[in-house]
Length: 288
Image (tube, rainbow, N blue to C red):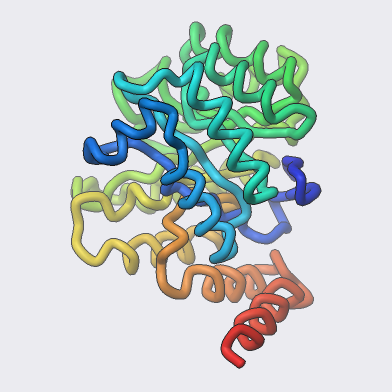
């Protein structure tokens, strides 16, 4: 199991625990100038509101991805991470490979335990980010690519090989296995790559068998397709029984929380239905 901490307490995820849902809407990818320009000036209100919206729906934590040529990550990321944590009380994760920005943001989140995403198997990336993660007691989330393949590994064997490079580097550096998460890689269905979903599912299963906490960026599944929410929800629900522990996802997907918590009960991630019933009672009280 893997743990993060925040003002709200400890968040545990991994095998046998409820699926962790990560608000993935705080990013600058393909965003218009009216989003980028205020952020570049230090106006973080739009992103803080997105984080608060995600919490109101029921996501477990917030991811921040603001890597952009017009944005000074070293200045903005620490401010944004601290403010979102204070406003939501939820754990905040950092999706960047800017070592200086990560170090500054983790310092602002201290003494709480965060997570660094997109740590690839490239030696220079590992050498730059593992010491920072270790110093701040952060979880390392690996993206299994960078050394043995050109581009994204497209077989289970290649992804596991890349994952082991990251896992072994972390273990050698003194990380506990529970503080390592591996992304199984979600490919866009629009690319029409045969068996891409099956490859991801089998990667999840293999990692889970080895006791590694797993994650995927579910939102990638529906890229460049219409009716994205149904594709993403189907992808998520199909992956949970294979051992998926955490998912980056749009909190606005209709039925996301009740459907996820229902699947958690069916696959013994919520064996006594406590989370499912808690959510049901909460939704019922709001309707009355």
